[in-house]
Figure (tube, rainbow, N blue to C red):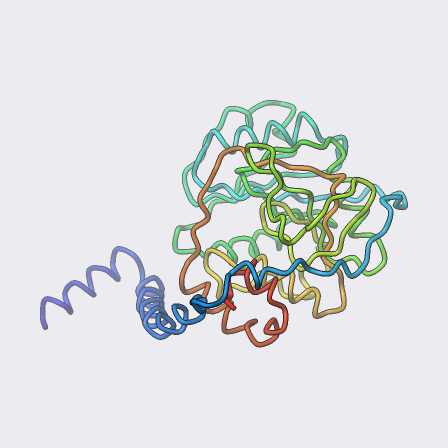
Amino acid sequence: MFNKIWRAITYIKNNGLNHLFYKIYKKAMYEYYKNKLVLSQEVPANKSQDNHLKNPKIVSYKKAEVPLVPDSKVSILLLFDGIKENLECCLESIIAKSTYHNYEVIIISFDELNIPIIGNKETSNKTRIVFYEKSHGLSSAVNNTVKMVEGDYIVLLSDNVKIVSPNWIEELLSCITYQGGGIAGPLLLSSDSTLRHEDIVPKVDANCVYEVPAVTRSCLMIDAKLYVECKGLNEYFIKSFADLDLCLRIREMGKTVQCTPKAIIQRISIDEEVYDIVDKALFNNCWAERLGNKPFLQNNLFLGV
């Protein structure tokens, strides 16, 4: 007993009390939802999983003839995942290809970071780094960073993607400023140039902008005022599902989530998506009932059927 108390005191000294509470909370949540999650993912033996994969109905679409957008400032929050080579490639593609120049790049990092490209005169005025302790969740870090940005619009961008379309910012702005626009995302290609999320975007027409259930934090744009109004990312989601939760909350506010094929980004490397089991359980608990009659959403958002 004394040994356990001593270990707990040592852990608190090294990592802080909040981190200990999170570890206890995570373990409790894992045990509570473990059986529920296993059951929710089971598929009856006499039913094929493919029978439940239905393409979403495109609620609305419009020709990509959009009004001119004002020269608003765009704040790009670049989420550093730990691989410096990916970050350099992503940052270089933003600077070299973007035809929209009124932007700033804020790199959110949980590790010490020093990359040569930030020291260039061309990028030093537009790029800065914000450091957070590892005990900070990603959602909390993003929300805190949004409070210090100068932009009228916010872009969440993963460091594992590179820009393909030079006018990607203009196209996303066009979707946001369109009547009822809430969140906009580009067409996301895998590193082998194939289409990702093909179940959410069942077909692609270069002349159309599609309304979709959700887009991911690989790249999404949202009005800064709308982000604050909806209270940003849900900080209960530590690592994953916060982007999907944000999209669904925006839709409940009567706004649209759109994907435009005229803005294209591409994965830099193949990465295996790993989801935190607690985040997955919380997302299931929040949205399972409201998405219960939408099988295609359940499958694509890993809710089970």
